[in-house]
Image (tube, rainbow over all chains, first blue to last red; front, side, top):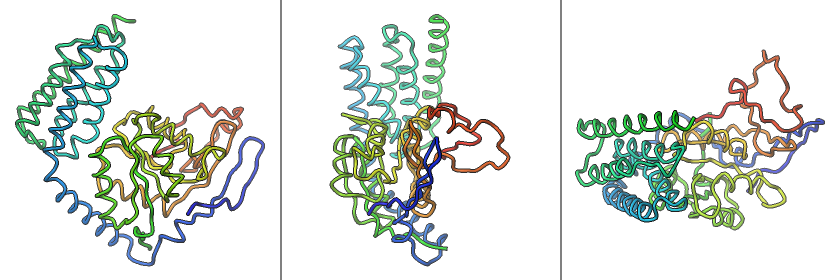
Amino acid sequence: MQAQTNETQSASTHEVIETNNDLKQRCLRPGNENEAARQAIANAEQAMDELSVNFDDWMATESIQLAKARDIAKSSEFAKKELLELFQAAHNMKGQATTLGYPFADEICSSLCRLIDASPDKSRLPVELLDQHVDAVRALVIEGAKGTDNPKASVLAKRLCDVTNEFLTHETASAA
Amino acid sequence: MAKIAFDELRFVIADDNAHMRRITRTLLRAFGCREIYEAEDGASGLEAVEAYSPDILLTDITMPIFDGIELTRMIRNPEGCRHPFLPIIVLSAYSEKKHVIAARDAGATEFLCKPVSATALYRRIQNVVANPRDFIRTKSYFGPDRRRYVNSNYSGVERRLNDGTENIIDPQQVQLEA
């Protein structure tokens, strides 16, 4: 199944290895490339539409996991491992919230990831601001605030991003 | 003009998030794929690669045990893995340049930022199948040629002469689609 080494050109500093690409020979068929792509992508979008009946439940599960990670991180006083787990829970949501129909949750989780990752002194992380991010995500999911046409969710996300930026600017300047 | 026979392709998806695996699997099946295997961490991703000999690996970056960057490095090590030429598409919510460059320098073939769209995933797979790149081996790198585009007007330093360290990044000459 793998590409086989076909030819090697050696130089003193590097080697160029031409691979005999098995995929190209095995998986390309004569046909209209554009039409095939259009059809495959349309099929995939249709399949995602069908899958989307699960998305609200998935977001609810993910947001509960985020809140749990926040609680554990707080009770550990933001120990390194627990803080990393909170970051990863937020990062997971960042990666899928838009796909699941909640782009503002994506923005809030991006802000939360930035807050945790870019804070120069983790012991000075603002607990209230962390809580506000997590609670905002929970609220969006509970309220079903989907899509980009939601003024309240938009304002909430923007405000959290702005406050995070202000905090990080201040902290970075203090640390310098 | 040619179309991809997706039913001939075998995939491994490595992602610690079950929802993301389901989404990726759904997209692949809709494209026409029939053989799709899943792994929920870096170690089981490596095991799945060895066990199923996939045609393409789709991997997240953040995973338990070892992450997608380490998984890529392990696969690209011919002494540690039987499939060093395996096309690897990294899917990640890490969209910052440093992560894209880390994936590229580990030997990733393509990088796709989450959220994943059907169109973006299709294009990455199409690129892997129809436009394979040569592999390069230097003292510090083994993987697909990171120079996607040849700039015939380039007159700067030949970085591969740079003692094999290849730490200089010139985005004009070394590009990875994000």
